Image (tube, rainbow, N blue to C red):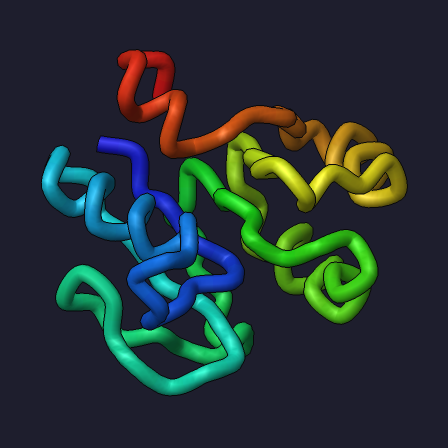
Length: 119
C-alpha cells in the first residue's frame, strides 16, 4: 500500500485533510500526518515537518502556495514518487522543482481520487 504523507494535516473535521486521513486509514493506507498544530487524526499523531520519512509514496498537499516555501526542502528531501496538489494548493514554482527531481506532480483532489479508485 502507498504510504501517504498528509502535509497540512488538521484535527478540524471540516477540513479536507481530516477527511482524507480518515478515508486513507479506512482503506488500509498507512499515513503520516504533518502539520503545525499538535493533535491526532485517524489515530495518527500530527508531527512537525522535521523527521524525514524515506518510504513515502505520496505527499498530498493541503497547504496554500503562499505558505509552501518553508516546506520545499522537506518535500524534496522526503523524495516521494508523487505530490498531489489538492484544489487551492496549486503552485507552478513547486511543480518545476518536483519535475527537476523526477517527482511526479499531480493536480487533483485526493478525496475524489480515493472515491473513484484512481488513487
